[in-house]
Amino acid sequence: MKYILKFYACTACLLLWGSVAFAQQPTDKGVISGSLQSDFQYYQADSAINATLVEGADRMASNHYLNLFYRKGDFSAGLRYEAYLPPLLGYPGEFKGQGIANRFITYRKDGLEVTAGNFYEQFGSGTILRAQENRPTGIDNSIDGVLLKYNFDDMAQIKALTGKQRDGFNKGEGTIRAADAEIYLNKFLFPLSEISITLGGSYVSVYEPYTGTLGYISPQSDAYAGRLAIGNGGFNIDAEYVYKKPSPMLSNDYINHDGSALLLNASYSHNGLGINVQMKRVENMDFRSSRDAPLNSLMVNFIPITTKQHTYRLLTLYPYVTQVFGEAGLQADLIYTFKRGSALGGKYGTTISLNYAVANSLDQRPISGDAGYESDFWKLGNRKYFQDINVELSKKWSRKLKTTFSYVYLEYDKDQIEGVIGSGVVKSHTVIADVLIKPRRKTSVRFELQHLYTRQDFGSWAMGLIEIGFSNFLVFASDEINYNGIGKGIPLHYYNGGVAYAKGANRFSLSYGRQRAGLICVGGVCRLVPASSGLTLSVTSSF
Image 1 (cartoon, rainbow, N blue to C red):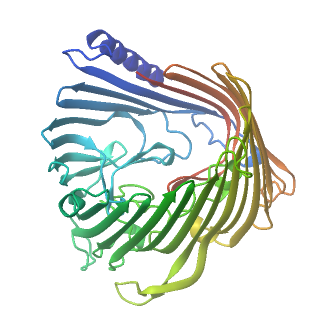
Image 2: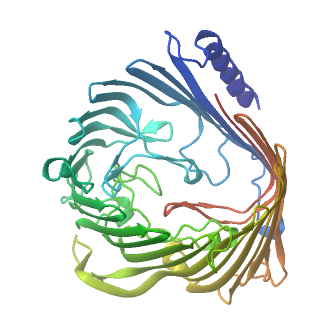
Image 3: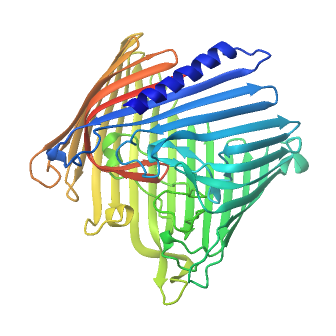
């Protein structure tokens, strides 16, 4: 507790200093701004959901983040103070303690931008390089070094960077050197046309000394990428190909095999109609700045997901996780909004969304030797990892009533996606009703009814949720019910309830309930969290 008080004492001093010295309005002294987030959890043992506590362990955990930014003219600077006292249950082990985890200074002038310190950056889709902060999954792989950017009068742009990645409150062993260039060809070829043509290329290299006994391991790992994007009106198409030289590491059992990724995307939108098709082939594309990094640590790149990211609670039971060592995926979206005043559109319009996604294995055949396996680029494997067929109908009936109804069919290879044995493929049907009522301007009532039917895994689930909003308050209560009680034959309730208050830039929420074990995923990157029960308090603010 004394460390939490220390964190807030430091926060108060910094905010007071900022308000006195610079205020928040532009002055000749510059502008200071920032944000604060604190999450507390108090855990209790709950044998019904296998939520256990280690004897003598701290029952309270908390994560805290304080961002401060300063800007004056062509200069900007910032820092982030973080504290994990201790980290929330299931958070990565490298996030322990407290300290300044991120600091930078940036200078911009006449198209040139220079950043020294911690920075986040992405080349193309991120398949070759993406440094990002993703708090829900416990990922912060910012690069601590130098980043240069130069814009050639909106005709082209180049980037170059070097540095080491953040690993909790430490840095990874490897050094990243990378460059990226984009040229906007339409400015040269069709200067008077609305068509856009962007051609880009990237190079990323990681150097990490190696003193082990495997003679085929090089201290340097290189990757190359090329991409092309064309857009005209509502039509867009883009393609990207990445090649990675062999980079033996812990996550791929130190095989000496190269990697590649091909991404294709085409979209069209016009007059209420939207169509999007994505295809992806990924092979051995785990790329890290330390060859011995486990789990989500020190990832250099990010493979975009080509399945729908569901947000309804029961659909998060089976989220897809990108299979970076071998996957071929396809996703197709169709969205159509019926016009207002039409027979199906009614007075306020109606929107229907159809989505299909599938992810399959590659034809990878194990062989003896350092390469580990052989594969045919154009041949699929025999294993389907994931399939999702869903339809959603959303309609606003009046100024006071809006409904959304969904049906989702999933096939989920739990053994492959979660790395377990003996669970097989889970096939589920889910129906969802989401109703929003606004009886008055500052009052709303929203409720969800969900049901997931399956004969596999832990059987079927049902869920009910109600949210009542009035003035600055939101009161909510929910219950997820597993009919089979996680295999024990007795219906098991995962209840949760609480209240949230928001005013201006501040938000507070307090809740009590149970959290089921499972995956928390964002964009196909996940972390596993254990079951827990207890009290949760969250505070966020910006200034």
